[in-house]
Image (cartoon, rainbow, N blue to C red):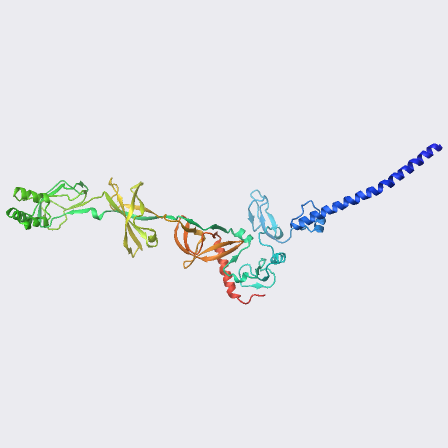
Length: 489
């Protein structure tokens, strides 16, 4: 019994000595563990604070507040500003609405709305400390300013005017949020070859230089007319009629009586007697009573006024013949487009009788007069007509391709704001800054306009929503004039 008691006492003393030896080591280990843990947490908090980042969602809000990283999540607040599709589709409504399957649109409160606007001016100025805010202006451009931040009647924040900005009245500054909502787009100014197709109506006409008439220079009697009618094709030298003229017979008799007298031959030539008839009189020494009159050129018989047995006074037209192997296309060009057309320019002509055929030619003449009633100028294009398809007085549609010369500075036509008295483009200067600039516009074509003065090749111009920026620029100029010297400081 005494041995068992001694053994128990020994075990108790042994455990006590063991626990006394381990306790200091355990405490030291725990102290070091918590020290390293705190150092790690502080290091992470410092790093996030320097990078202005937010803590992940799994970090407790109490620890986030202690370390200063991110902001505590607040419950949505404010009034309902619009309603959105419950499936996240880009569909919105200002009033309660249902989807096609009957589900309600989700209301969006003011605090939940995504904004692309710049941060409040007070925070920006406090963070940067670069520029001093002089005053705040109305966001809608109204002549109303405030020395302190405020909102207008619609809840929009007044915009800060920084030191130095109030003097630059030619530049408009737009926040990224407004640029996103209004859809402002810009494109670079580039050199382009501008071409433009000018379409004008016209008609087919005969070449005035290819029309000939058959007439006598003295009174004559028609003995016979050959089988030639209107619309027939004749060749040069083809007999048309036979006639008797007392004056021609008398001149022929004079030539026979005095063949060496130059005046007798010259008289026959003045009466337009054919050369072969004069040669026949000199050869045979006889004067024929009837003389054959021939076609002076190849062509189409347009008129036949000769009738057997009729008396034709001097100068009366007996036949009218036109060579239509080459015809004219006459078109009327509006006065405002006249600068785009030049002689020698290529043209394509289509006639309504042959819509699948294209006849090509060149502008041979631009007439020097303007039609005072239609304010148009007439131009002439010569067209080859070997098949005779083109007939006088046919309606024609003419296409003229203008431009195509050297490359010029050009901008999209949508970039030009034309008020009638001035042309303006909006220069994108970057970082939301825009400058309205007057320009001198040249020719237009292919959806672009030539800019002769006002821009350089290295600049960008606004092509969409430029009217909004121009309106804001005008409001800013008016505001500057109204509040000059009255802005609070």
